[in-house]
Image 1 (cartoon, rainbow, N blue to C red):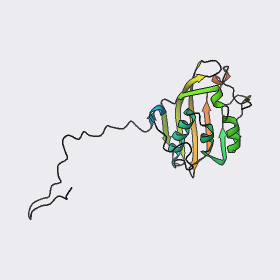
Image 2 (cartoon, helix red, strand yellow):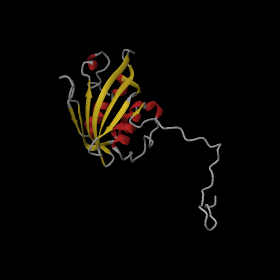
Image 3 (cartoon, rainbow, N blue to C red):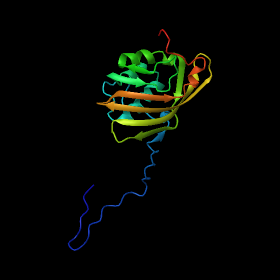
Length: 187
């Protein structure tokens, strides 16, 4: 396509765009989405996760839906800390280090089959490496076949593309249901 030209004394006008080209469809708000409509920004085997905290978090949720626990754990910094401020006495309140997180999460797919994280809202904070995420995790309990529907709020910090801190606020009463305790699994 050639650049617009003008004769001396006249104003140049850009070439007209074809009338047959429809305008692009508006994108859904980035802060509210369901993960079933998202694709992973990188493959689960990719050595470099996405850089922003929101991207790392979304990618992690996709890995959980895919039951790729080792891929999810690979998003963690070696010294990352996971905390559960509302955990009942019988559950861990703090996991220190990637290996502790891996041991905790390894049996997760044997107990909870996640289908989606609807109503995901990610809030940016004054610290660009920290987000607050609100969401529901829905699926089924493997042992009983009953529906699983948990509301979560997580405060997540990412540094150098790795999760360094994850505070998981969930309803401790809901985990008392049969089929939700995977912390004592031998997997």
